[in-house]
Image 1 (cartoon, rainbow, N blue to C red):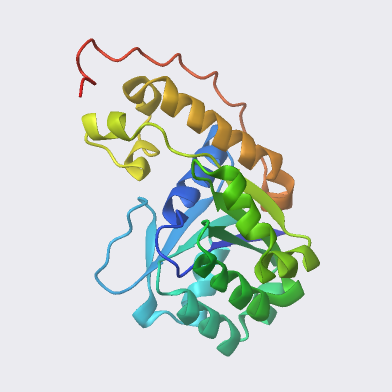
Image 2: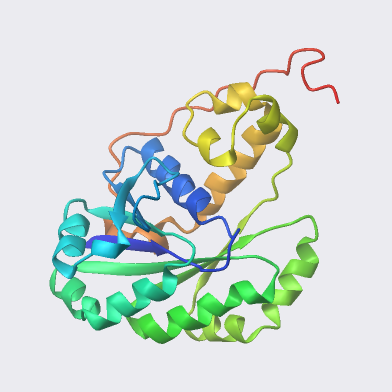
Length: 248
């Protein structure tokens, strides 16, 4: 059975494109055939290096054709288009269409410590109900315990408990200075083969922890569509920053 992984949350700054790239990196390591799509507004390019779907001209036929092109599809829905996609999904009876096409759906909802980021969780549950699997991806800050408490006491958490959602915790970024020095964004770093060498041990540690989180949910996320063709290569040792390069 094919797999469609939807990444959505209309609250800004939840890390949707970063999460899509992390999935992409993980699948690349195993040589798993897949594609990354980005649903955006007209004339707004994707920041993930993925194929762009134009929301202004999207049709059910086009959408299904794109999903059918790969055994595993990661769809990053741009901020502000979550409500549009939910209406498109329901209005075109996409649930039935995907079911008949043999496509299983997982909905990935990245959230922050801000309760407003939980609104999209409730909306997704109303749209997809029990016809999808759910995964909550927490964007962890330095106040991890506080973040955890905010989510655990929310109505959104209780709803996700009903659907037996799996939770991932994306660790805090501690290498902002290294990114700035190398003139890179996190998303661009995830698309660079030598990022660990250029950014050093903090990035390497962050990347390793993220890949570990994805690995822990591999079966739930990718299901039978996860068909590796190779084993991951051993991580290269991170280089030490040049003396004075990271000086304040």
